[in-house]
Each structure stands twice: as C-alpha cells, then as structure tokens.
Length: 126
Image 1 (cartoon, rainbow, N blue to C red):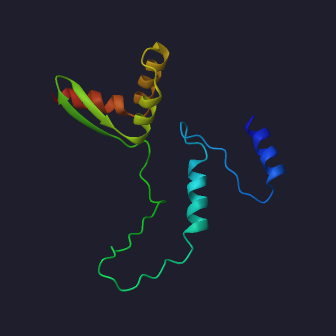
Image 2 (image 1 turned 45 degrees about the vertical axis):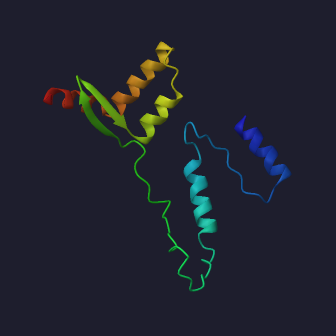
Image 3 (image 1 turned 90 degrees about the vertical axis):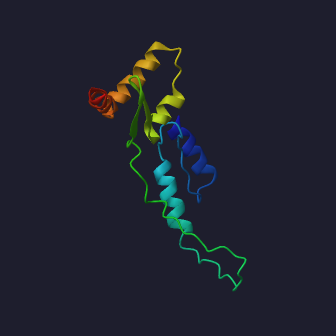
C-alpha cells in the first residue's frame, strides 16, 4: 500500500519530496529530520539589531540525539522500579494492557533491551 500511495503522489507532484512515516514505529522519521535539517539549516540566520530586549539566539543540533533504546531504572521501594526511556515509553503508550499478548510483548521488549536484566541485578542489591 505504501508503494502505491508513493507512486500516486509522485505522479501528481513529481517535483516534491515525499516521506511516508510512522510515529508509532519511527519509520522514516530520522530521514525526514535529516532532510529538514539539511534543507533549512543552511538558510542565513536573521541579523538582529542591537536591542537589549531581544533574547540570545539559541541553536540546537537536532542530529545530536540520544540512543532511543537507552533507559534509566530507579528503585522505588518494595521491589518496585521506575523506568524511563524513549523506546520503552513508546511501547507502553501503545500497549493495550487488557490484552495478554500485548503485555507479553512489553515483557519481551524489557528483556531485549536489557531492562529486565538491569531490574534483576538491581533487585539483588535490595
């Protein structure tokens, strides 16, 4: 379906750059970010007149990102932990916790990203 949609778009708008992307899976998001940065970051920065009321211009390097699979794990109490990280939070937001298979998928991700191993290691300290 994606191929068909892209072909139809290219027929109608042959000179336009197009991306089919998914916020859920992250497919093509990096390519779009790279395209936007490469295309629009080369524009000249506007020259500000000397004005004390203007804030200093801040520049951000959007290509300097953290690993989406990185995470932090914090022991709360009574063998309860708090985990933060881009990928694991994305998985949890998309999960229907009423669906047993979906919950098992979360456990699978915890294991694949070494979060489960980190939890086991942390729980032995307490």
